[in-house]
Image (cartoon, rainbow, N blue to C red; front, side):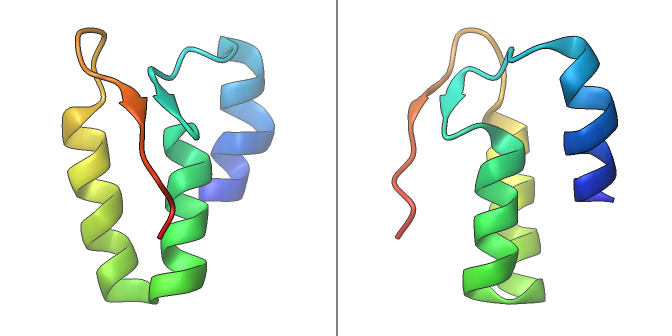
Length: 61
């Protein structure tokens, strides 16, 4: 589902994410490095913060 979004939807919307790395790249990292459950938790928390007045740099650690 993440790859579909990155390859089809994000491409058409343009880079609008207020975070660096983008939310989809962060999610990709979270699932790969932290596993399914922790990756899901990190992704949900990130998406809840993703709005224009928030943003910034989230370190991938």
